[in-house]
Structures are given as C-alpha cells and as structure tokens.
Image (cartoon, rainbow, N blue to C red; front, side):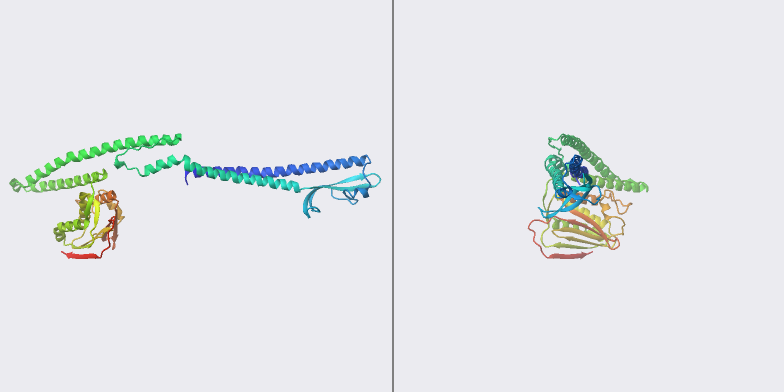
Length: 437
C-alpha cells in the first residue's frame, strides 16, 4: 500500500466515524424537535378547550363528540403513540395522542383525546436521512476520486524519480539529472539525489582510477620477479645448496599464484567497469572444441573420461572474444580442478544453454556461495577462488543466467549457463560424440 492510499484510508475512516454519529445525532435531534413541536400544538389545543370550558363556551358533550374524541369513561392521561386508519389515503397512519380530563359545566367530567398525524414528521426525517446518506456517499466518493487524481498528477514526479533510480547504473559513469518539480518536497528530493549521484560517480571514478593504476604498477614488478626467479632456478650454484632450491621453488610458486590473482582481479575490475565494449559474433562450439583439445593433456594426467555433446547448428553469441575465451576456460578448469582422479566430465552445448557436469568430492551448504570471491571447495587449494566469480560477472555482463547445482549426494556438480538464442536459429538434431582418455 502506497503512502497516499494509506493516508486517504485514515481520512475516510475519520470522515466515517465523524459523519455517522453526526448523522444519527441530527436524525434523533430533528425527530425530538418535531415531536416536541407536535406536543406543543396538542398542549395549546388542550389549553384552548380548558379555557372555553371555564368560560362555559363549549358545546354540549353530545355535540362535542362529533368534533372530538370524547368519552365519559376514564382513560389513561398523557401522551402516547398509536396507529389509526386514514380515510383519505386508505392506510394506517401513525399519530401522537394527548388524553386529558375536561369538566363540562352541567355534564361533569369527560375525557378528551386530541391527535396529530406523524406522517409529515416521518417524511421529513426520511428526506433528511436520505440527504445525509447521499452527502456521505459523495464525500467518500470525492475523497477516493481526489486520491486518484493526486496519485496520477501530483505524485507523477515521484514515480518518475523512482523509475530513474531503478534503471540507474553507476558503472555507466553518468550523473543523475533529475528535473525540478513544482512540489517543493519532490524538488528537494531530486536535488539531494542529483548531488548524491555526483559525489558517488566522483568517488567511483577515483576508485576505478586507483584500481587501474595499482594493477598497472604491480604488473611490471611481478613480471620482473617471475623472470628473475626463473633465472635463479637455472643457476648451477643451487646444486651445491640443498636448502636453497626448495626455497626458491616455493617463492616462484607464490609469485605465480600472485600473478594469477593479479590477472583475475584485473579481469574482474575491467568487467565491472565495462571496459569490454567491443562485441562480435563468437562461435562457442568452435571455441569449446579448441579449449577441449588444449586441455586433453590435463585430462590424461588426471585420468578423466569426458564427453562432448554439440548440436549441428552453430551456436553464435555476441560477446567480446576475450571474455568468451575466459568464460569457457574458467568453466572447464573448474570442472577439471575440482574433479577426482579417474572421474567424469560431460559438456553439452545448444543454442539455449551450455552445461558442464563433472564428478567431484561431496560438498555441503548452498552451491551458490561458490560464486563469491575467494570461496573455495578446499581451503588449502592454491587456486585464488575467483574462477566462478569471473564466470558470474561475465554472465551478468551479457545477461546470461548461470546456476550451480549438486546431485547424487553432493558428488555430481553441474554448472549451467543459459544463453540468448541467436535470432532465426533452427532446431537441429544433436550430434553427440564421446572420447575416453
């Protein structure tokens, strides 16, 4: 429920709680006033009759009975209501009655009953009640209509601001340029958001430049260290010192891991900064076959059995060639690195998806957490734990959906990348071929 609807609902409830008691009070108050007026008229008529009786101006009882309801038998005195037939309208009509004793000179006391019709009173009350209910309906309907008008007109700048914020992407390096609405509160909000986006973009640019400079400045020292360590490992003098060789080998391995970490973080930074704007048609089926051939020696070393299933129709996607190569390379390396000796690896490619499934050690927990940076299956592994993070960033960059699932008690791992099918791609029967090492 939005803010305007919530406030309007409270206004409607307040109007209802105030209007209903007010209407009831007006109804009963008007009814009391009308009945009081009728009783006063009856009392005035009684006083007139009593005054005539004192002045001996009344007709005899027999003649008086033709004009008034007179009885020589005692009756209950005072006001009361009754329903009497109406000879004109031919229906039962409510009346207000006043009964009192009257002394007629020479004939003794008689009981006179005066009456007054309540039809006009009830008609007036019905009209007043109808008017009040109509006003209540108009009030509630007017508030609902006003709410709709306010929602469509006055709140339009706010909805425009929300739509702009939903589509805002900091990585596009653009500052928000929200307009200045006529409503002061919305104008102040847009002004604050514009200033906030300016500071955010400036900080982001500073951080991006620092990351790029740090990556560039550390690349050369790492390359020099790696080259010099390679030269040291080839010196004959290492054969004379049994302890120096292993130390240099460990140092060289650490340098290699640091270099791979530097390259992976640099790639992630470039993807996040959208520095791979160039996109060309890439044949994933050809790229996949090339990577499989390159990794065949590694398959043989790990005694892995692998299968490749590619459809006849070419699978073409629009990507940067370097990112396409990195995507396939990281997926295959992940399937090999986290496999078991003598295990299996299957690769399936179609215009809709790329699926890589492999055996591996059992894992527990949510598989989606392995897409986090520096998350590893084995904490003691020399891998930096950035392979799946790079895969996820590339998929997000191009709008692919990547999922990681585990089956067979956690020993069968499957990575699935849903691709955007190329326009006009026709379905073709699958061409399967399996090669066992």
